[in-house]
Image (cartoon, rainbow, N blue to C red; front, side):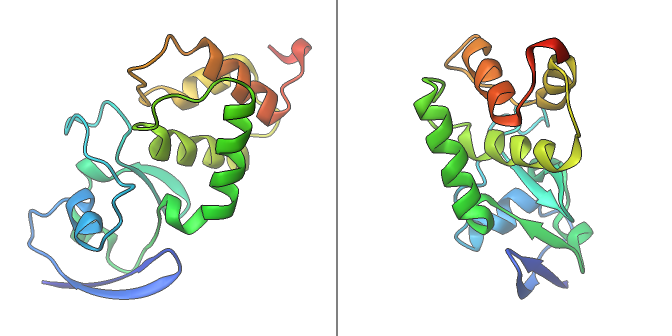
Length: 153
């Protein structure tokens, strides 16, 4: 079947099978930042934005993206690089394998939540697994990035 969608603001016409998952379809398009992780919708490595909302590409059938807008980290290059530099400056960078999904989730959270508290951040990031850390450094840096005041925790 053919589907038409918008990947990083570019209109694309693709041929997909009914059981193709979006993670595979996007990787076939050369978007290797969309990573395959657990294949169980638990780790967040395959996160993309579907119409601006974080979505797990490993559990989304490609045909369901018909007519929709998909954003990968390649589509937010400048903003993503800025956030990655911020995380590195805070000493909260990791090996990088989970970074594309994590960064897309944080950037979506920044757009969606006004004045989030620590519990809001933890809730939003649930499902983004990092195998390198205990998350405290990332949480501290994300709070600083989002401008979370100490009294808002």
